[in-house]
Image 1 (cartoon, helix red, strand yellow):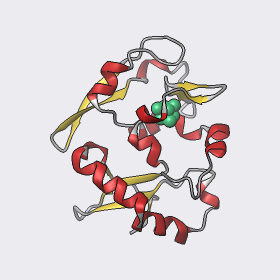
Image 2 (tube, protein in one colour):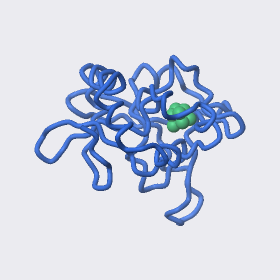
Image 3 (cartoon, protein in one colour):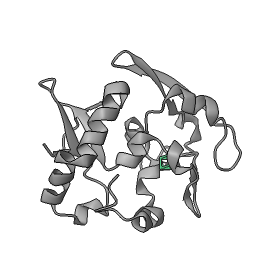
Image 4 (tube, helix red, strand yellow):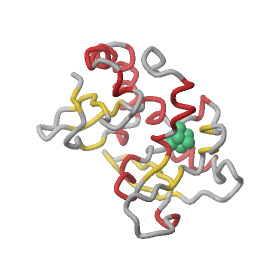
Length: 168
Ligand code: SF4
C-alpha cells in the first residue's frame, strides 16, 4: 500500500514492526477470526495461540505472545509467529494482515470521537520520508483503502496515542 515511500527491501531487511515488547502488544495486528482459524501454526510449525477480543461490536483475534517472554526486561522483544527471521513475513501477500500492509499508518480514534489516519513515530524507514508526502498518501489512495477496510473491520481503529502524528 505504501510502495511509493517504503520499498519491500527496506521492510524485509528491517522487520522492526514484526517484534513486540510487552508495552507494544497493543500494536499487534488485529486479525479476522477466519485468519486465526486458518493459521493454527507459525512459520516454524509451532502452534499459534490467539486471544479473541472485541472492538466496535466486532470480534477479532490477536496472537498471544504473553507467555513467550523469557526475562523481565521491558526491552525484550518477541517475534510475531509468522516472521521467518531469515526471510521476513512468511504469509502470502493475500493473507497478510491489513494492519501490516498499512504500517506505519494507523487509523485512530481521537479524543473528540473523530477518526484520523496517523503515523507511527517509530518506523525507521518512514522517518526519512518528508511528512508532506505521508500526508498526501493519507489524503489519497492509501487513506481511501484504510477507511474502506475500516468500514467492514472497525476493530482496526485504535485509540490515538500521544506521539502519533495526525496526517489529516
Ligand atoms: S503478520 Fe507478517 S508482517 Fe505482520 S507482524 Fe507478523 S510477520 Fe510481520
